[in-house]
Amino acid sequence: MDGSRCFLPVCHGGGEEKRFTESGIHKLILCAHSRGDVDTKAKLQDIIDVDGNAASIVCHKGCYCTYTSKEKINRVKNSLKRKAEGECVRVATRSFQAQADDNGAFCYKRDCIFCGDECLPKDDKHPDRWDRFRECMTHERYDKEHNPLQSMKDVILEVAEQRNDDIARRVKLHIGFVSDLSSAECKYHVRCYNNFMKIPKYADLPTGNVDDNALKQIVIRVDGCATLVGYRESIAKTLKVVQVVETDEKSSDSLLRKIKREARSVKYNSANYDLSEFTRANTIKATSPTLLTLISDLVSGGEVTKKSLSLSQSIQSHITGTRNQTKLGLGVKLQHRYGSSELIKLLHEHGFISTYDEVLRFRKSAARFLGDNAPILHQFMGLSRSVGIIFAWFDNLDLQVFAPNGRRSTHVLSHEFQQLHPAGIPTASCKARGKQSHYPQTF
Image (cartoon, rainbow, N blue to C red):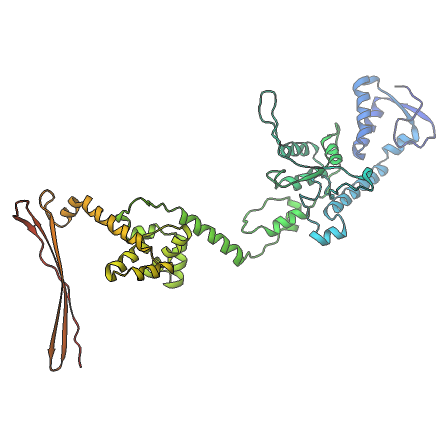
């Protein structure tokens, strides 16, 4: 290669010009590699690739010695290192005011994901000074065969892997924790995007310490995280071991969501009443476990009792707006014992039992259930399943005996079941059963 102009970019414009052959060019390539001079290295490599052994360049001898000097190369390396560290500090703490506002943490809705600077809106007074930016949008792309292409995040991370420099690692920190850039409303400068996507052919960019305050905030504020992944050289500086104490607000919100989810998962059949559901085991099964545990701890020391179960089912009915075993069972029991619709309506207004109409519907449904399952009930009572209907008698016996030293009272509940043949012949009967209690009282 002939020429009278010095080839090297550090030319001082004086001294003797000299032609350097292939060996001299290779030495310059190594020095350009150490200096981080990508353009000069690429030009020299192109000359070697084209001319081969006959490659040559012309430059000043003094320029050549200055460019290949180890002392000068070390100065350039130190300068690049300081520049890289200053860039990291500038990105992490953009300005004193920004640091005072948000502790220098990176903000996806405000800062560029490449340089970390704030994406400022266009100034009408100085439109030519505006650093254009864009916001990440959701847009699915397909190739010619209609196969989905990579997302913008995947493309950026792939370029970052190829660059493997400080900027690439900073970009990984910014978008590595985001699943969808458009959902996070990420922004970026058009200029930064174009510069980042251009990968130098012979890139050997300086690598320094990359730090980001956003990572610090994530590491410090993660609740209940047992395992963290980070850079070995920086994780020890940012990790802080503290005891995580859940606030009442967070714990109460999660507890409420869990109780509502469990309560609404219970299925009810509003068309009819299944009497098999009205047992203690099925009642507990149809109650939110979290709610029942909480109420039991409050009122019965953690034991599931009649009180805690009734309160839990009453609360659950207000959550779901449906009936349950306890509210309906209490209403039926009150109607059977007192026969007062006003009492049932009063307790229903306070949210403890079902409505009076539903109590009546339940009793009618129970009667139909007994009629539909008569053979099973016959067998249970030891009566014939094929002939005769069942007659039942109930009576209360009260007896009071007065004596000189006091009074004795006796109360007996007697009930008898008898089944008759269609022709009137008794087929089977149950003996009268009774329960008596004595209450001695003195005057």
